[in-house]
Image 1 (cartoon, one colour):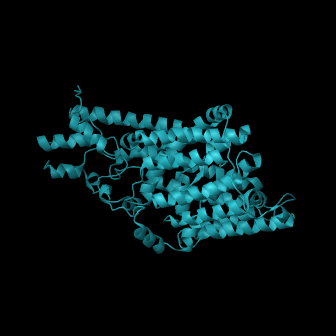
Image 2 (tube, rainbow, N blue to C red):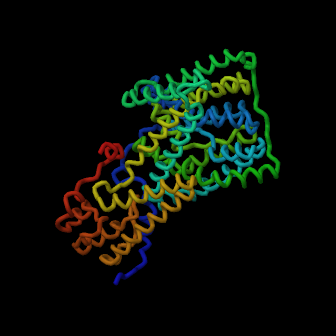
Image 3 (cartoon, rainbow, N blue to C red):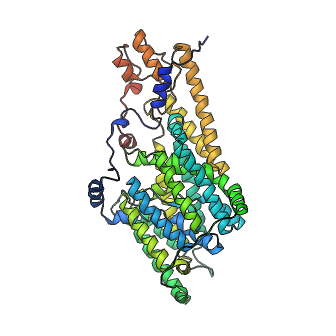
Length: 507
């Protein structure tokens, strides 16, 4: 019979102090990003990455931005001038705060519902304001801090993998808009020939990270868009000059309609993909860098509590955007400074008239760029467990990852994917909990990143000189050796874990 005892106060405090997304060795890694007040350090880092690849990486997220921006502007739900101006301003702000290419992208769920229901500008603003206010509150009160203490790493990786599949699907849908190789309806500037050519080009230079492939594809798309604009004699509709933003305050009815119709559906997507998964991805791509989820929620709140009142579409951060910019070469805030400056200039100089040219940008190029950027996001899911040498534990973690990703894609809802993933992780934790409690009644608390029970079990071993039963796959051999507990487990379990995230990725 298993004997259950309550954990001590010291055990609870130790558990809450542990970060569940990184191993004990990763805690000691130096931060590669200088703080924002270290201007010399930032300048030195940007100088080291002053390459075409860095500027090319700034364009890694346009596959999401351009289609949504065009659609909302044509419908009259958002101002192109305000969206470009504030989008550029937020790019520069986030680059300065974080020091990494923390992307600024549209709130996709709100945009989808706004296009379906033909939202007014006030209703779109109401949706963005409601979501941002809640996210800002959760961050300011540090309630999201609990996420890194209770959400297992495989659940976060499952969210990233599910988002990868969803974005890949959107990329394919963009390519299918003009999915023809020949026929009367073929466009010379946007067809499957160009989609295939750009896809092959990206694959050929996949391992050659110095080639600015995103910039090449983007400039080719701009050339095609300009050619089509001239062919249709539409350059007369493009007006250069000073364009300004306008105040757009939603009424009470518009706020209620926008928030209830679109904001509630966007809320779990923003919390999970734009905050939780983004923070985990930043740690993965930049080992030693630990972004604060409080800061992330703060910038999301500021972006929309200011911009939505001035006609801008709602913005957030996102793991897919960061993966895309990283894939195409961005490593520092320099890429965001470049992208932000371009957006501000285009918004102020051309304003709404720029839509004439953007409408002709080949969707085949946008789809390929979005598809390949999504693949980069999915690649980080390969490091889904902090127990790479324990086959039993890796199998459980992989099941959690698959359940989370499959539920997210199947239901097209981040919240349901997260919920089912947590239920699966809890079920496995209870199994290990009961197994460990039978062998060691004091081993009740899970440990870092996994929910395993070796934290308390190792202390029991140290006191008694015994080791957990051989069936416990959570036994930590290094702790047992330090406690002088006799021979360790099998060779596969006793192999040392890689010291860094980068080392784990190389395995």
